[in-house]
Image 1 (cartoon, rainbow, N blue to C red):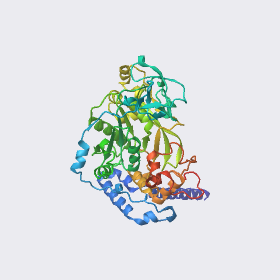
Image 2: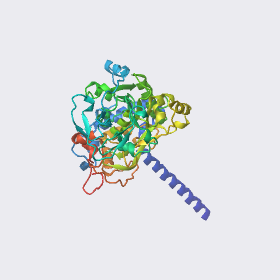
Image 3: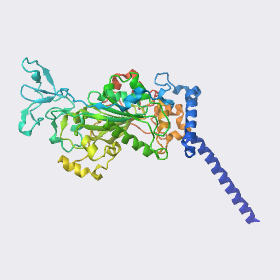
Image 4: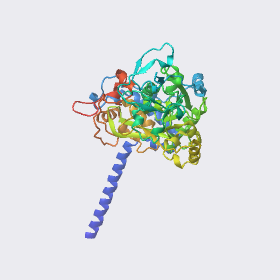
Length: 508
């Protein structure tokens, strides 16, 4: 009798465990978006569901206003973004022309250095100068205010036989014999600091970027680097990184005049297909974007030289102007190189500890001979294992060692991760590639706009954790790119936490 009772008890326990497991399974299903479960049923069915559910989400005003109205401040940054509607787009002749036109790279004829009466060659921006017109020599219009610094030895742009004892009084933030070495290089780990010499002819800078909907950050990049970069190669696709259709919004903005101030320096690359296997393995799609960007873009640039500089960045990575200008004007640095970037989340107000250090640049010769014109290979740190690296190193006649502009204490750029309005973060969630797990866009509660606003307010992450970020002072050096700071009204959602409450502390 006791044995039967024990068996019955065990059976009931097993049934209870099965019921609890089934309930947990149902609960888990409620957090998983149906589109991910349909991924094996074919891309057409999945696309139909995404378009239908996405459109209904954006058209449902109650979703934006529900739960906690006080988290919905009245400012113009919160708006339904036009880029968020994945509609069919008829590619006009103008778009086709943009995506097939060549770009002729011109010489940079700007005068970056001045020569003094004493024969010193000094970097204009980094030197304390006094304007004194000389009627007989336009090149000698400046005389140095040289009372504050001792004499320095100049490594001139030509042969070492032409070295002279000269005097260049450097402004704060500039160093070296010519006052042309910025702090981000002076305090970097560059191993060839004693070999740096100004060039007679500036290099040309090629900056390559993939764009999805980071248009405000792109605007900031254009203003930060517009007078230094010679061509911006910008790649846009009619597919998101997840493989769903999207509108060519950047092409529209190029054609409607939004970027007319920099359009003459933009080479538009259109990726009109999604790579095989990219839906199942998102890293295939992620890598292919950079490969296509590099090869298509470089093939359409004419008048290239081997010593021109190639930079490839994510759209949320903005190098500082001074560091890029140094690469343009000086010889003697080694390659490849990276940038130490200030890290922030949701806006520049949440400053994360440490820096983002990503290899992102080299000369065109190294890009061709070592990396096979593939930008994703450049972004990795295994250059020294590539078959042609030693051959290229012997070709240069120098030992090549990777180095980084800046340091953990001296930022050489900005990495602003997830820096959007709540609607923009929603679009990033559902556009993310199918490989960087957990893919938060697959969880319905993570896409709620009020939940996203709460994350911005607290600096929390989608896994429920919150970090104790150090306070960020908007007046601190390298808080944000200068253009954003000077246009606070337009970009205030990036500069000051729009959801901060009294007593929240950091992120104000």
